[in-house]
Length: 182
Image (cartoon, rainbow, N blue to C red; front, side):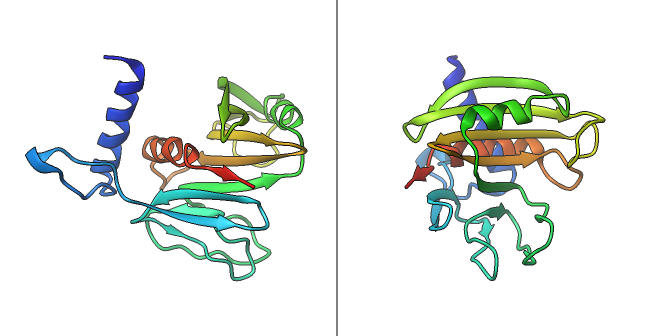
């Protein structure tokens, strides 16, 4: 079986077991879950996410930044909530972003150059080291960084207790394919 086919089947299996896929085709085959699209005008992007999931709608925080399978609250001027997937525009070029995230504060588990939304991108899987200023040592992060001129759109998930890291990675992989930059 081709690697692409295998990944697609695995993604569907994860989505099905997590309750995100709920449409059945004739013959009992499950289809991909329906998607909804949201936009972040300030972040200059739009992205699709599983329709059964929730996203923030603003209220003092840029809309379309956080995504989770269950309801959650975002408090303005506070730390980011622990959610399945987050999206954020970072004010730095792609090369600077990659250098800053692959230094001594993270062990690089995976690094792959890609093209997404017609732009250069990098997929990273990182493990925080003792020198990480933000995450506890050993915490894994899976992310895509998409270059957009002098900024980067970061789409990420974390391996934190209470979050389905493998399932969220599969959903993130599908979401990032729908990303549109403005």
